[in-house]
Length: 328
Image 1 (spheres, rainbow, N blue to C red):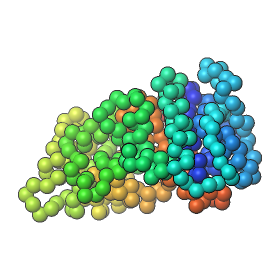
Image 2 (cartoon, helix red, strand yellow):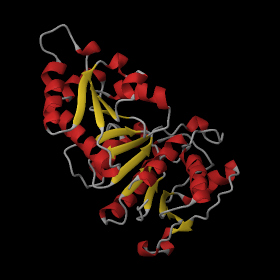
Image 3 (cartoon, one colour):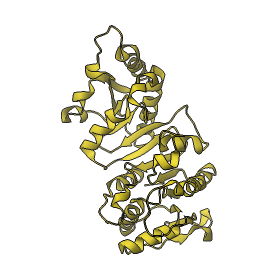
Image 4 (cartoon, helix red, strand yellow):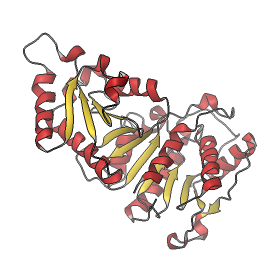
């Protein structure tokens, strides 16, 4: 692992299981070896409150970032305190946290713009309360608000070392999916995925593409498969990208099929994420491609009902750190 710049962690929604999960995972990492500085961006009071509530004894000390300059940072854990007022340890998710989350992200974006870091991990947020329909998801929020685009649109990659999936359309109503796919979008997304595997993982990936319609047909002479998906695949093959399809989605996720590929590209969100989560649960990370930095998120929501129970799975966040540690 050669990565040495600080990794930023935005805590996200304060009423979430993420702080509990983060403390557990950082304990595991520190017990082995911490190879880079980590900067937590969020409320110090919330972190301390949840540690106390859960009776967790961290193996590390969280240092105040304001006491250090970036060039002085050691391989330790720091915190940039973002004020958030709360009455008790855990509250219900509401619009009250919107400014706190926004300020946390803004602080991380300032560090990224100044090239002080190039990896950001964010905890989950409530799209209903934080995004308020301005953006369909955090993928689009980070892409637009960070101010550092290098492509026309972001690509969502749900990553697992054994298999990843990527939907061409993300948080789009099903009735609008066919209106939001075209040859250029499919080509651009797959080119970015191919580049990610080659540059970050040193793998020349095999990519499968799913059709949109059941069995890749509609009974009509022309459909999305013949008009859009197949021509896009032909163009990508000319670029020497190892891409195949379109495949019928209803049978493609059988074991003998998925073992042949590194990544499966589908046309809409649930076409890829539903079978993927059935196979891997939350052992995955949500990576945004198309940015000059690496944005990664846990592949689950705030799950406020599990707060204080000390039972939430750490797999998604562990997957993130395993991926970062695997970067050559």
